[in-house]
Amino acid sequence: MTLQAIKWENGKLEILDQILLPTISKYVVVKGVEDGWKVINKMQVRGAPAIAIVGCLSLAVEIQNEEFADKKSLRQEVEGKLNYLVSARPTAVNIKIAAEELITLANKLSNDEDIPAADMKTKFLKAIDDMLEKDIADNQAIGDYGAQEILKNSAGDGLVRIVTHCNTGSLATAGYGTALGVIRSLHKQKKLEHVYCTETRPYNQGARLTAYELVYDKIPGTLICDDMVAALIKTRNISAIIVGADRVVANGDTANKIGTYQIAVIAKYHGVPFYVAAPRTSIDFTIPSGDRITIEERPDREMTHINDQRIAATGIQCWNPAFDVTPASLITGIITEVGVYKPGDLSKFNIEDNSKDAKNRDLSENSSAK
Image (cartoon, rainbow, N blue to C red; front, side, top):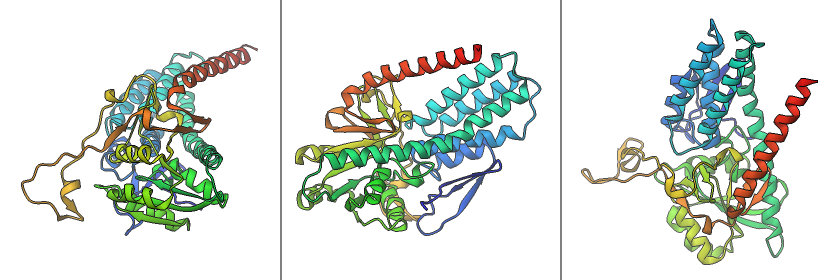
């Protein structure tokens, strides 16, 4: 069984405090939206899919115990608090998309005169509850599509060697993972020879979290420093590099943990395939290119201190962007829950997706009419 970063049962929400890992495994109770905002902002929970789920579940915790006199007051509460939660981590797009979808649902339910306030609340909570199960299913599909893609393009004995950056596993999602989900699928098929994970400075998500998951699942892995990637690729015959994404934009440019861009450049130089694994909720078609992505900057202390011990010279200035943007030209493919796409094909994917959504709405309306 993979690690459980999010516990949601009988209306109670707990998250595994990832700041304390790997030394201490401690769950934190999230009692409402304010708690949800704090655990996201402080990176006690992180990873774009997990941020979206925890944010929405924190709203569910809060409204499940409230009584609403009318649907308008429920709709207003939903919209205001979801918009507040989005502000906790501005680069990750999943929570923004989830908020927009839930606000649309709240408006639709509010405008339906046949649905009383109590039923609106029940239906809204059910939509949030379904997010956990869907995320796990989507991640498993990403894992299988990614494994298939990498094995199709691998040579030799069929065993592959993978490099990954940051943490994209059960700790970053509802379960299984995106890029680490591909690695899990390769391991399950007995096609993974080895995985190399970077430490991922300055927050060390690779050393603390990815390494923790690899050991937990008994996946053959080795930890490397961030500045060892070029030497590793040159000497170890790497099959592919797989990373996650906090936001993929319309032209395929991708924002991910700082350090991703330089790994993609190295991969291009050495002719190693570079893949981004992300659910469709990480794709933001409203932004045309990566230079329009808002990049979150984190506190200096993440660079200057380790475990409250200062390691940098006092008085030095710091620049600490949490993410960088990898140009689409460096990305071999984007692995989603519905298949693998070249960055240039995402616009076509969006048209097809919108067409399917429209068809599904028509079918639903026709079914209701009958």
